[in-house]
Length: 137
Image (cartoon, rainbow, N blue to C red; front, side, top):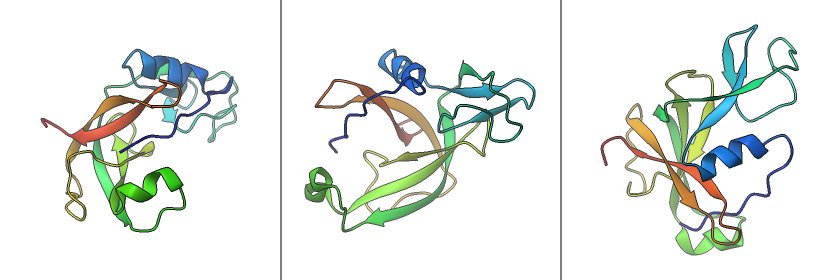
């Protein structure tokens, strides 16, 4: 499935730089000892502005899923219908990422299944983005 090419900002540049190196990083708050995503200027829990970027394992679990039959994104229309799943990171289950789950047939997303991150190159800019696949696939 073709991915849209993000244009990194100052805030999320470290995330996308790590993706280009096939690494998954998320923000970490030392005082709270918690991860957060998407990136923010400060900790969503305590307001700490001194967040750091930490590499995570790239493993998680499928929490939920939907099937998209009518996308408003014109480049995705030829791919319809397609899965969109929410992925909870193993390190911090409150951190949720989205995935199309390449290789998983529509409506056959196994809730609770283990997944691992892969990185796909977007066509317009060559920026890599995280995607998720069933673990061991």
